Length: 359
Image 1 (cartoon, rainbow, N blue to C red):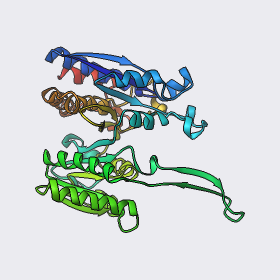
Image 2: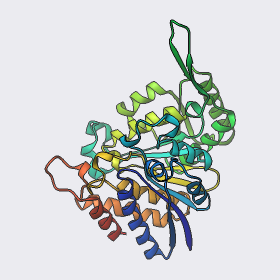
Image 3: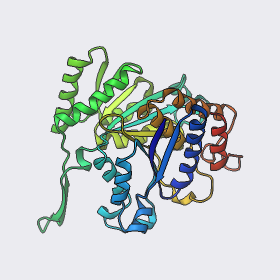
Image 4: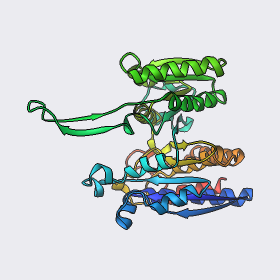
């Protein structure tokens, strides 16, 4: 079968890690008899340099005509002095909004072979760790009204941003969290700040009503975001699926990535209605190491696996990628971010070659 994939290599290490992910995708196609038609388009800093816009219309058109989108990483100090609305990162918000991607899935997994890399004590993560954070992606304070204006003479300038959620937005993200939990450990923890925020009180009420009506078999817990941040480092194994708002999910998912030992190992999926999705590593563009062939491409490779599983419905092929990554680690191979200074490691391209060969 033929699948159309829009590929956005992005900035910094983005093109390097994307090349390795496409090697693995090609190997999957070769082994399982699929054809992946990949069309490269621009977004972020590379698009600004080429077109003056971080998200050209051509990129959106190609993405909308594809079955899925693969994204490397965008941004870098080269574009830091641009106004906020013109920065490379605005392309991410634009893609999520224009493509209707309202749910971000971020798994935080401690691989057995990399347990020593976690900053947590072995007793805390003994037996492995597998958390899925489901983050609302197109609502809340990142998309609310905002303004900077002169205040009183005493205040000087004043800025404000609005945190706003509707029942519809909460229901659709909660549904994804409950559905994911039903396929995993059967537990959802809804994270909010309902002791302070009206938007969080609506969030908690809506999630509770959906749970009672449609998912009584799922264990539901509620937790304030400050406590959730503490519990992630104190007792992360209590969590299965965490569902939360845009800003809380942004912070907690980055925290969760750090307790796994390496941000370079973690993929993500951004989903909308139906099966359409955009897949990317959770790390940034790392311009300081771009072009050196030392970036870890595994998060991007695992993002390909998520794409095969969630959008294309190719579970066996997704399993093959995850097994290949595990076999790579079990063989003792490590990328530069996973070794001590002076130790040997596999380059970006060697890592892609080895994992592809293990498919």
